Length: 139
Image 1 (spheres, one colour):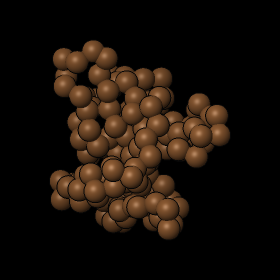
Image 2 (cartoon, rainbow, N blue to C red):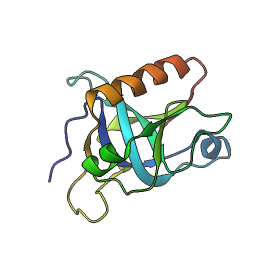
Image 3 (cartoon, rainbow, N blue to C red):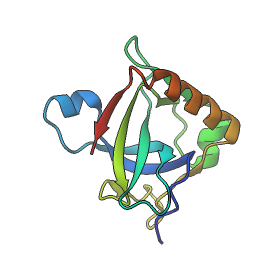
Image 4 (cartoon, rainbow, N blue to C red):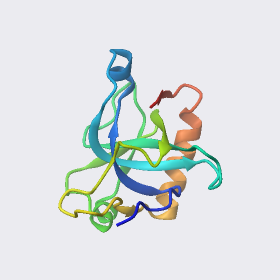
């Protein structure tokens, strides 16, 4: 199956590299669901995307996150544990890239689907609010 078109709100599996890992010299992250929050123009080469990590760890004093409601987690195929989209840090990478991987249990599928528009609008607004102090890792 081909990679999906990178559109905002798409949830993909990606080897997200946390800012603290990059600062410590790391160059490869852990495969996890991530929300694509922005993509450069389709004709741009290389094409870049901005990815936000999805984690089971609740935000702490140094991070900002938006919780994904249980019904949305089920709809996109995430597990039942509480999950947050972290908006206070991000990865910028080319599309396509070697960090993208198939969803567990669904070989050949490279996306979970899209977050609902209202939830994505909250995530995007929170990301833009945090972008001034956000921590980005260019991959």
